[in-house]
Image 1 (cartoon, rainbow, N blue to C red):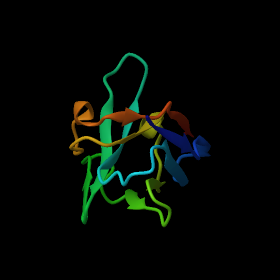
Image 2: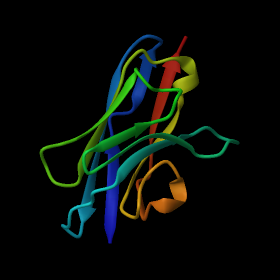
Image 3: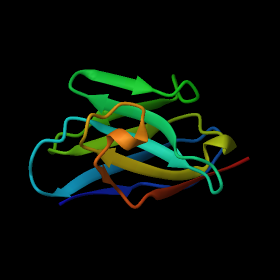
Length: 120
C-alpha cells in the first residue's frame, strides 16, 4: 500500500508563499502521475496541479502563482505557492498513481491533507 504524506502547510499572510511537500511511502515503485487538490468544507475537492512524465497541468486559478515539481527522491512532489490569497485557504491533498490529470477519481492514493490558511 502506498501512502502519500503531505507537509508544509500553515498560516501565511496574503501575498506570502508556502511550499508543500509530498512523499509517498510504502511500496517503492515509481509513481509517475502525482497531483495536488484542495478542498474547503462544504465544497467539492478542487484540482490544483498535476505532474506526469515531462508534463505539468494547472488550474486556471493558480496558473502563474503555483508551481508543481518533482523532488530528487523517488515519489516526491512539491507545490510552491506564491502570491497566496485568502481564497487559496483550504486543505491541500497530495494524490498519486492511476492515470493522473485533473480529475480526482483518476488517482489511486491520497494523503491525509495539510491545512493552508491565508489571512487578509
